[in-house]
Every structure is written in structure tokens, then in C-alpha cells.
Image (cartoon, rainbow, N blue to C red; front, side):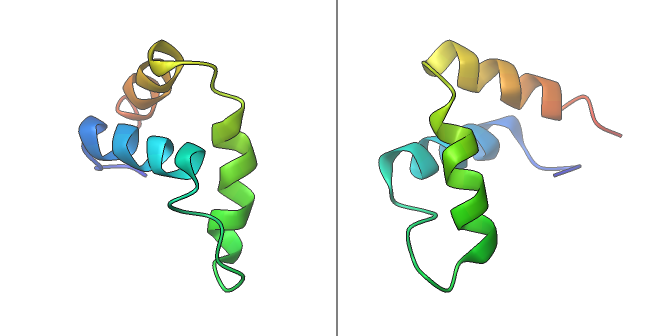
Length: 57
């Protein structure tokens, strides 16, 4: 995740929540990520996670 732009992280988290990612049987990591993304209650939570990830070096 290091080096990814915050907008990209936000987009992907929203894609997981919407079922665009993480629903295909061959996408093992996506299937693991989707339930985690589903715990994010709203856009503020998604933005906070993206901002936190952006601090990784």
C-alpha cells in the first residue's frame, strides 16, 4: 500500500463496499478485503483510513 495515492485507496475501498471488487471467486485477497471495507460506515471513515495509509513510509 505504501506509495499509493489517497484517491486510489478511497476509490478501491468504495469499490469493495459496492461489490465491484472482492466478489470474484479467483480474487482471494479481494474476498478478504471486502468484509474489512464493509466495516467502514461512511465516507469519513474511508477517507480517514486512506489518510492513515498515506502516512506509511
